[in-house]
Image 1 (cartoon, helix red, strand yellow):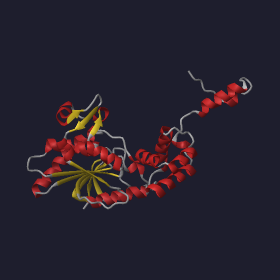
Image 2 (cartoon, one colour; image 1 turned 90 degrees about the vertical axis):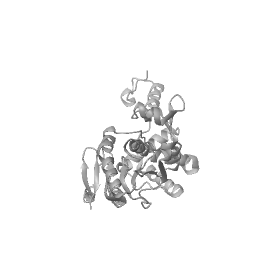
Image 3 (spheres, helix red, strand yellow; image 1 turned 135 degrees about the horizontal axis):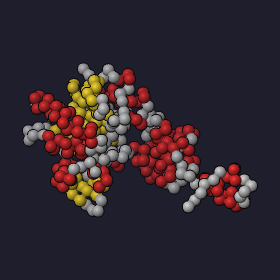
Length: 302
């Protein structure tokens, strides 16, 4: 058992060697986001911008600092300056940092109540419109990471569509490595806790003790593309867009830009779903009508 003490308060009651030992213990506390100085943050941002064309300016510094600290710890460093020296010279580490900054942990049917509304209300309504107008239903998962979200949409549609329905689902992300994983369709068991046993049995194949692979038919039902929502133009006119737990990483101005982009990418009457902890920027509320405030579901205005 290790007992931490304030070495200044122990002065005079401990030997010099003991005080040194106490300070070593105190100095071994894990690096946290708050320990990454603004100066170190700007140096890292400069390296990523210059060598990876990845811009941190649009993100909330406090959120990115937490991820930076996690990556610095994982790389075996406690001093951000020492890590910066590595980052400057090591292309592989720059790739690892990009993965740490851009991949969002997810799972199938994350926030089950949100997917329940999609299954019972939103997708049936949009399918009804598509059938009436004889058009294809188009669904877009923005920031899809390893594919859990768009594949969850594919599993929902599998239950809801008829033989004559046409459905297209795409997932986009800034990380090429994440998209490669998504296309392969392998998932650890812990990401599948939201999948009911019937779906798990019919749509996934166990690959080992704790990994499953989605079947080929469902893998082929989703297309994945690299896309930066801040830089690239939307290439998709969607009836439903899921952009969940992404806005929280951006500044207010960038949130407004993204919401304006998504409003323009939705078909008339199209629906946007945000993360349950996210809200519309005040100056974007004229772009959408709220359909479900609890699940953060909005319909494009106009």
